Image 1 (cartoon, helix red, strand yellow):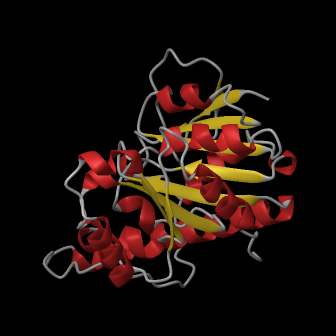
Image 2: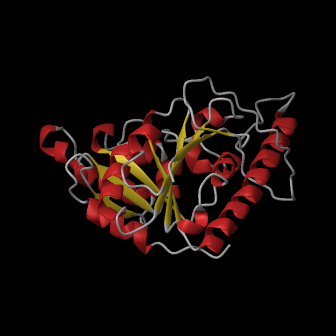
Length: 270
């Protein structure tokens, strides 16, 4: 089925030697939903307006996320939002995942990146049924995450009814991606042990939001001054319910457990 390059406005291109201009062009409707958008009281002149704008944006995002989720559920596929910091190993893990289950499961990848098609190109030909790319560089706040509208722009170029599993590889960032529902049935993150034991405490929103934490680069453990028990204790303090899967995406160790977790997820009722 191949890969298409999808902009945030829904247009698709098959070549990649061009600049990427995006214009969402979508309005925001409050819909009566109130969201926690943080403390803006320091903005004495514009604080109220800022809150109203952010609430409208997040409300619209949640409406489109619900549409995405209904489409995923209607197609009978599992959808997983995969997040991490830059360089934690998402793409390498996905290549291992495709090698492990790509022959028996129809796996689609929606690749989110600020710019370039590097990761999507790397995944092309690795066993995915289809790969779609969304560059976020010109979206509102989109440089740091995928939102539901951006994800929806890519779905029209993916054959959802021909997939068993859709993995949404979010932009590398430990903050913003966790705050936007994109319609997924489950959230997972890749954490590399090179990042330090304190990350769950410093970035609690991300670690609290996920259903599974894939602890990557375990092959480096003998060579690092890293306290695995301390990290796990910090993670438990933030999210005691998270499934923890220790892997090395480089060697393949533990990837089978990750794949079993993926395939055990059930499409939620929309």
